[in-house]
Length: 79
Image (cartoon, rainbow, N blue to C red; front, side):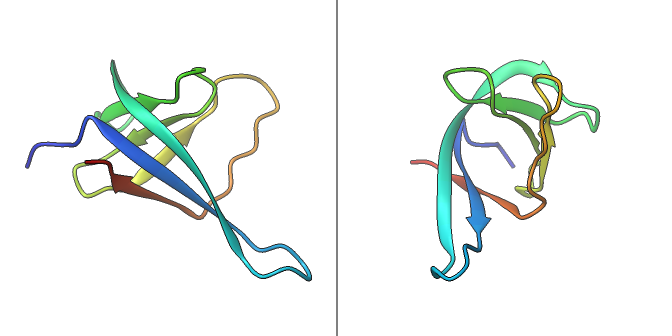
């Protein structure tokens, strides 16, 4: 199965007292592979990076010190 060139990373946030919302970041495939051997995707700034498997499993990759990634992240193919 061929992977998409772009994905939307969807970060679920559960604000109190506001209802849950979604934060979405578009990432593009890079020429790098992550620790699991899958392609690494990054946003235009290079700050948001994620390894995405062919089953759309997401592993966030820190691009700098003191980054904390939410565990609930989904990847949706774009296009």
